[in-house]
Length: 365
Length: 226
Image 1 (tube, rainbow over the protein chains, first blue to last red):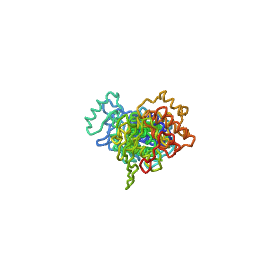
Image 2: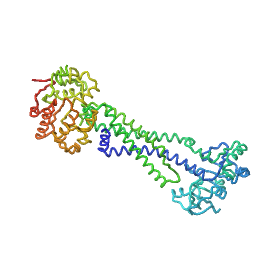
Image 3: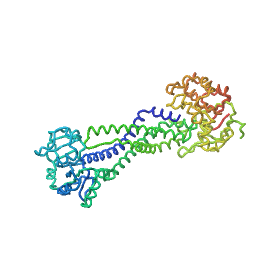
Image 4: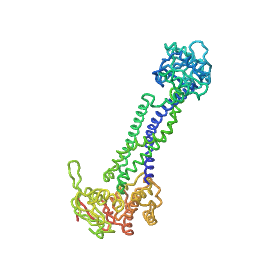
């Protein structure tokens, strides 16, 4: 019976119900989107790192494992790695930040192409050696409506797009290593070296040997390296997620508070009727809390559905800049947070309703 | 006060409301007995205290002083929880403005009174006869907004008696109805009193309405007057 009363109350004011559900949905969407974005972007970085095809990833002493660092490692180290037992390919690269989270990567095309299993060109082809040339991935091309043969500005100079490749191979913007070294004042320097072995089963053995010879260098297997792409390894990311969740809870709290506060005022007479029929405070509180819980559940479901919409929008509008994952493991967490915020918002209106004077309530016009 | 005495017994009842800085005496020493199965009409002008007495007898508000016995239990000694329990089981209210829940159908308005009292929602055959007597058996699936005032008041009466309370309190039950509908509602109350032995305490301004009662009590300035 209480459920029926709750449903009928929600049906009786469809616009308010809809707005409350939408507000809670936005709260849930905010939480799921920020978590989905952080996870998606980390997973995308992992996938691109794996796409390099290396078994071992070497970074210079003192550098951050994950970062937009410059080029502090001597290029001659590549020769050293090539001479090691089981090493089939060793090639270096420079990663240079170009604003925001975007980077341009310089590679030795033939070496890297062999190591990663070969770029798949959707348009154009590899570098021709004529002028400043750049290869972009499909997502960057889609986001910026670019094609092979177009020119783009990177590092304050024009670059001719010679090829558009499938995404997932290290970077979205790829230029020849030598040219990037010249332009960034890093001639003879590298950001990292990728090593491919004759058999991945030898990875541990080679790493142990390298660590003995280069104790200060950061030497990772590809599994170790990609496992570093975690929320806690990105400075400030977890705090940022908590801030967004906190703001979401505040939004949900305020919306439900306002919605139920006006609902209680509007239903003052009905609360008086229930009291005249012998309804206890707990009974009246129960009606309002169930109504709140229902709004939170509907809001959470709609919020979850909205995340498919935000993902589609991101994939359409900014596929190169952002990657959002759908995070089903966070659905119950976001739902529980939304429910908690909503119940907190319902607490005062519920208390006010439960303690309303029956006679005043019945006299309410 | 014995269980075999009056169903309602009021002794030296006072009620003072605090209005800002001023105390307003709504009841100034009311004494009244209502016997089991009696139909009593309380008549008086606005401000005479009849609604206040109605609210106290119904357990909606406590008295300032004095004693009100319902089935031998003094309401002045009851906690709010006990008064709430009494409203569930021993008292039924009929209001001038019907006071039906607008979002529920007539059937659910009646059922919610059963639910609050912790009783099964299904109506027994005896009560279906009462619904036929009230003439609303065919209107149970309509919401109040789709019903006339007379129909709403009959639903309110059905809701008030669905838990078989020993006392029916009616506050201006015909105040919002036209003459013909008023007569029908009064006839129903009279019928409930005669056929079911329902004790009824009815407040009214209307002398014609009061005339259907067994006894008429007059109030003025917070007191019962001859």
